[in-house]
Image (tube, rainbow, N blue to C red; front, side):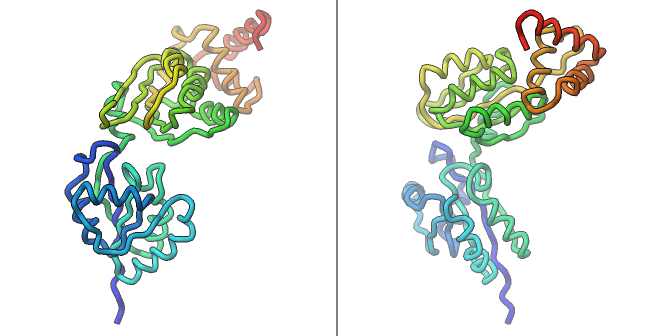
Length: 286
């Protein structure tokens, strides 16, 4: 007799306020055959707060054991089990464990569904006051300064609003790097402790936010940055042209190619950009 495959359920968990838990979360926690949790201790606190006792087996599923545990969970699913995946906060797979298991389940023809729940990405985006019609999620930036700058330069011309996660002790360095690459006047919002008692949303230019963060910030952080503005030729002064060329050069482009690219995106003759770069060099710049 052939056993029908089970179902993988991705469940969103509260990012702060426990009352934000969707009603279906308690149902799934109580009825799943296997509950895979990023942190079993935090899962225990969650189930106690919701007044539910998992009937199924509880296993850990975090970054350190994802590779080894995924095949085990796939076998459970192939055997007909209903496997519930939860992370510490928010939706699994979004900068949290889950992608490997989802990909493996899909590969084996196993049904994957979700219990929608709170999301720091969407909550911060909605509260930021920045355009939300088009956006992209960039996750965590690299910890090393050079790699962080390189990653930011890759999206220096991104026109969509960008959302980042960041650790509080690295926030000042990250905002300073963003101000350097995107410009100190680029609008942004730092969302701290979303849905918690001390929730705070600080909005303003990147330069000002970097100065504020230098004093020290605590809590869970989500940063939202506006996309690159669409500016006409008359709005791009020589300093901005030079900055754009420099960003491209630091990303690995040759100066000639960088000048041509900046001229094309600005709708200007290459000679105009070239003259601006030469003038800046003669004035003591690069």
